[in-house]
Length: 127
Image 1: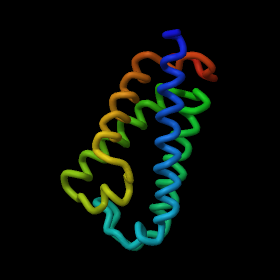
Image 2: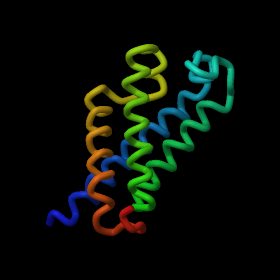
Image 3: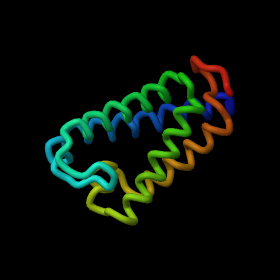
């Protein structure tokens, strides 16, 4: 049964990333007006690009395609949330519409998948 544990974690993380991508696309007009730390405000491509990247990360987790690379991106996304939360809280809430606890679990599960690999029913081979 432990062989399927990474698969269950992969699917759970994929669903979180799909949710984040969905909410990002629904809020794209509001996100376009927000100032971002590195690129400023008024860029119409930032929110759709973020949604596409989050969707692709979720897809990689769901299918088990390059899971360890997706796990690195998942760790980066969770750490981005904590950095944004510290320095620009209004941007963190808009771009990462989950609670701090969910972001911490996303970080922990992504680190776990980085170390253990994809588990059963995955397309990739562990790095």
